[in-house]
Length: 220
Image (cartoon, rainbow, N blue to C red):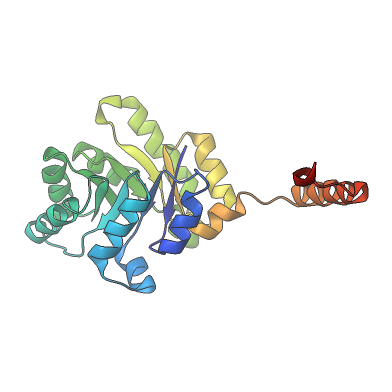
């Protein structure tokens, strides 16, 4: 499974990219607004840090303006992946941009039928929002399972399932067990994957035993 991080915080991106665990980045207008800075400049800076796909979302809702914005974003860097909403105009833009060789991430997916439409429109990625479904009492992971089942029947579609609105490590684990291609994680969720109380306990014991020896590896 590939890990994207869902943020526009450049410091977070640099720090997590240094671990070698970051395969790409997803952003949206809300994240850009939260962190400030010029939208286009921020996207370019992220693309320079992370060699993998960087999803940059259009802000228009009509096809012609979405297409123009998508083309503008695609010129920022070779690894820009234009993000469009799962609407009729969004899918028109997806088809046009995909045919021009631009990667497209279709976002705000909440049903398997929507995911099928996005794949037929040529989407590189489909972003089902599992956390938001959980919030309204629907099983978000069941949506991932259904999309993967449908896509497996038609491998020629080629769309990757990018699990979004991830809230916890268990969302990540369950997505991986189902075979999702990508999970986009808030930095805090990615960091939480490292943590286990027994790891901390074991490390403390090792360090205590080492301290008793009075040795230092760098001095030997």
